[in-house]
Length: 353
Image 1: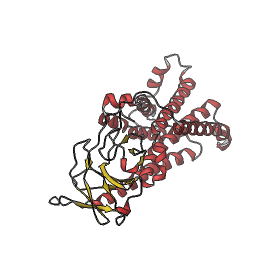
Image 2: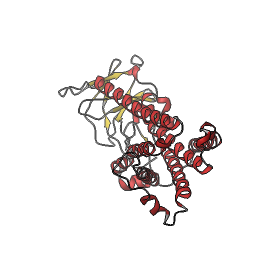
Image 3: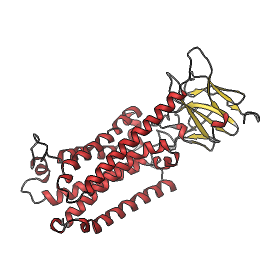
Image 4: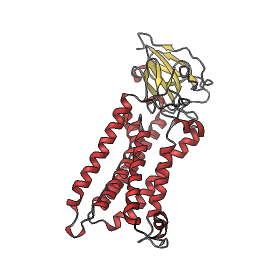
């Protein structure tokens, strides 16, 4: 695959992924609409339209919470990596559910206004100087704009057009959208909640996202500190042991003043490339060697391990590194070669393996 690849390519994994998501969303909405009224006090029974609004809104919040949990979970346990493959599909569906929530709100609260419903939405509450009664709608509108913008620019055309750094920076605004949604619900729905379900949902969701990111970041920092063993005057450094690298997988090494390096073991050989995918800076070391090519776990972009080049007709290239063996020790030259430089793979002898 390549950043120059334009058509949408559907395969069995994508179809199953999207089907599971759609079925899960439909099941949640049906269950919520059917059973949510049973948990409301009889004196505060909401109407059907309010139930639908809450169903779509809570579903969008849960979906976005799951999206933000996928990244740290995949770094903590590789069994979550398959969820990363089509995470952009997850985001598009979340934006669609959020739009359904907004449409339900406009259709119920503002369709009967003598003014244009969008004008009524923006001017019905202007108490910006107080906390209680603050126009929480503004936070929801801002979050919705971000989610829709991210969904619209999710295709690789925009990744190539905007360049990976700009595209990545744009899509990091998903965290801002999540904060805005938390504020939207906290100043809106929670204020009028008749039972503790909504405050608990929002609190646990935000806490889970924060704890997972903090723990994954702490673990990553700890590993980096342990692996940082480069001495400037040493041309070769000890990277790992041969036994540390599973077949068709990689060992990621962190070096001082250097980016992370992924050392792959495949077909009885070792090769090293940068850990950053040329597509979206995905963690190549968390991927596998498939059909002789390093395959990024995020979106399946592939590179030959010996020269870091994407197979034709694609043109992406990675920086490569020299390796050598000292018995069972894997030694690494921390100086990167220019992107696409061929480096003879190191063959693992019977004694080393």
